[in-house]
Image 1: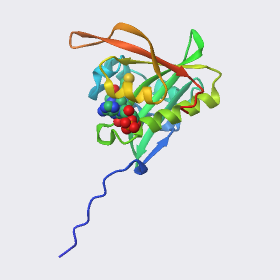
Image 2: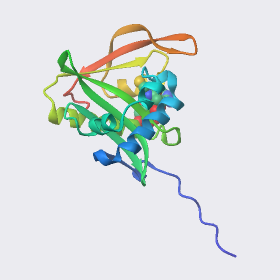
Image 3: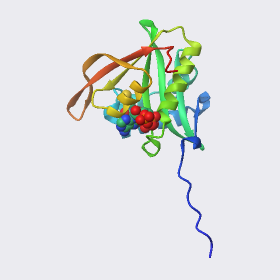
Image 4: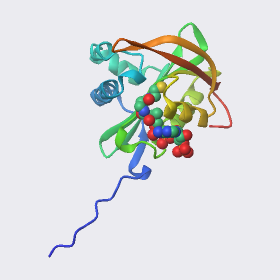
Length: 182
Ligand SMILES: CC(C)(COP(=O)(O)OP(=O)(O)OC[C@H]1O[C@@H](n2cnc3c(N)ncnc32)[C@H](O)[C@@H]1OP(=O)(O)O)[C@@H](O)C(=O)NCCC(=O)NCCS
């Protein structure tokens, strides 16, 4: 009888933190659309707006020097991402958006690894001083993740996300771009 081989469970070591060349824009688009379908309340961008973006817009996001996108990849499958962009009216601030980890690999440090890498990349190539993000005040997992990286609540915005007839409030969190949290 053939021995039964245990199926190895994925560990964080199976997962690489990577950036993508522009020709992998479809994988980026597919993961972002999956995130918006799976977690519509977590993001202020409506699915239809992202789905209507052109090939060139997705590609540009992967090469624009004022836009950073970092992914988690297991094998050749993307399982997480986070992005950041310079706020046009406020060049000293960078906004973090699109933070998402596939449910199958959550609570294994992948979100923290993606964000740490993103922050390091922004710090290495931007003169900005502040990192900012918005998070629903009900999203305990994300708030704890950001707090663990040194983000603190600096304000609140009401009725930011609308989903199935309900409006949700957002906390604004900030930290210095360069800090002992890495
Ligand atoms: C929020 C999210 C990105 C976290 O990703 P993750 O890979 O599971 O996070 P990590 O494993 O790196 O966790 C890092 C820290 O976050 C906190 N955290 C993560 N998940 C948590 C949970 N379910 N409950 C409480 N705290 C949690 C903990 O402080 C954790 O540190 P610890 O493990 O040392 O205690 C993930 O849950 C997700 O994609 N959620 C849906 C989309 C979303 O809400 N995005 C944020 C939009 S603002």
